[in-house]
Image 1: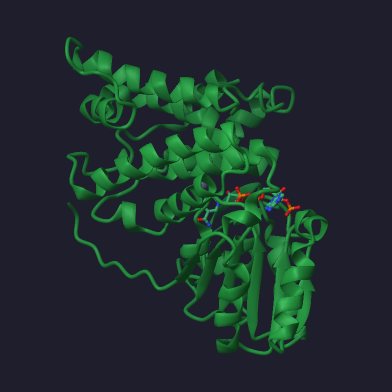
Image 2 (image 1 turned 90 degrees about the vertical axis):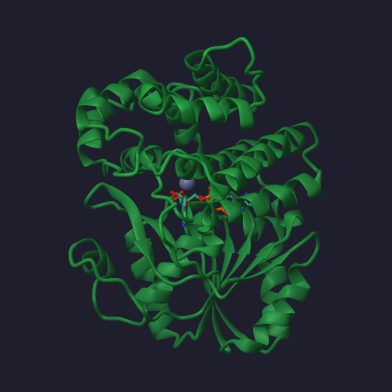
Amino acid sequence: MDKFVFSQTTRTHAGEGIMENALREELPHFDKRVLLGYGKGSAKASGLLERVRGILEDCGKEVVEFGGIMPNPTYAKVQEGAALARKEEIGFILALGGGSVSDCCKMVAAQSLTDKDLWDMETADGLFPDRALPVGVVVTASGTGSEQNNDAVITNEELYVKRDLYGLKPEFAVLDPTLTLSVPMPQVMAGAFDSLSHVMESYFGKPSNSFITDELSEAVMRNIIRNMRRVLSAPSDTDARAQLMWDSALAENGLLKLGKKGDFQCHMIEHQLGAYTDCSHGQGLAVLHPVVYRHILKDNPMKFRRFAVEVWGIEASGRTDEDLAARGIDALEAFIAEVGLPSSFGDMGLRDILSLEMMRRIAQSTIISPGCARKLSPIEILQILRECL
Ligand code: NZQ
Ligand code: ZN
C-alpha cells in the first residue's frame, strides 16, 4: 500500500425526497448572488428548474441562470459562464444536473476568480487554482462522482482534446434518487457503468497485491452490478437508484484510490474518443473495457483471477488461474450486453465517423497511463480502437 493523505470535505445529503430540506439547510451559508447552472433541456422540461429556482428565491437569493450546458462541456462554455459570473457579481454557484453541469460549474467557479487562462495554466504550467467560488451540486443524473471531487473533464474543441482540469471540491452535494427518475434508461446504464469503470480503473492499478482498498472496491463493484440489474427490471425502484448514486460518489471521491496509483487507461482513451466524436462517456467505456482488458490480461493474471471470483462469483475449483482470469472478462462483456450497453463503436453509431486517420489521431493524443498493468503504446491503442469498431 502506498502512502496517502485523505480529506473528503464535501457535505453530502443523501436520501429519497431530501432535496428541498438539504437546500434550505445549506443555502443560508452562501452568498445572495447565485449562478444556477443547468443542462440543455431536461431540468426545464421536468419542472425541476422552476422548483429549485423557487427554493432559492424563497431563501432570499438573487438568481442568475446559466443554462444550456452541454454533455461533454466545452472550454468555451466555461469561459461563457465565468464572464457571466463576473458581470453579475456572483458569490455562489449551484449546479443542477449530471457530471457535465457539475464539471462545467466547478471550472466556472475557478475561472471567474482569475484572469489567467485556466487551460494554459493547468496543462502547460502545471499550476492549479487555489481559489474558487463555492459550488453546491444537486445531482440529477449519477455516475461520474463529480459532486465529491475537484476534477472537471472539459473538451477544448479548438485543440481536439478532452481532459481533466482541476478546480475545488463542491461545498455540498445533494443525492436525491427521485430526481433521477426522468433520466432515459440508456443514460442510467451509461452513468452506472461509468461508476463501475472508475472502480475497475483503480482496482487494476498498482500495487496489484490486494489490501483493504481493493476489498472495498469489490463490494462497490458487486453493489453497482446488482443495482443496475434492479433498476433495469424496476425503473421506479428509488432504493436501487439511491444505492447507485452513493456508489457513484464512493467510486470517484478518492476513497477507492487510497494507497494506489490508478490505471485509468480506458478513461484516457475514451476521453480522446469523446474529443473527436462527442460520444457518451459511459457507453464509450463499456465498449473499451473488455477489449483493453484482453490486451493486458497476461500482465496481471492473478488480479483478473481475483476479479472473476470476488466480483463475478465464478467458481474457482477445477479451473486454472488463466481460465478464471479470462472468464472474469467474459462475465464483464456478457453483463454489458445484458444491460443494453453497446458492445462496439458500431453499436454507438460511430462506425461511419471513425476513419482510420481519426483513430490514429485519437491514439496519438491519448495520455498513456503509468498505473496500468502494462503501459500501452499509441500503436497498441490504435489496434484496440480498431478492435472496438
Ligand atoms: O442536458 P440535459 O437536458 O439536462 O440532459 C442530460 C444529458 O443529455 C441528461 N439528464 C441529466 N439529468 C437528467 C437528464 N435527463 C432527464 N432527467 C434528468 N434528471 O443526461 C444526459 C447526460 O448528462 P451528463 O451530465 O452529460 O452525463 P454524466 O453525468 O454521465 O456526465 C458525463 C460527463 O462527465 C465527465 C464525462 O467525461 C462527461 O463529460 N466525467 C467527469 C468526471 C469527474 N468530474 O469526476 C469523471 C468521469 O470519469 C467523467 O469523465
Ligand atoms: Zn468516468
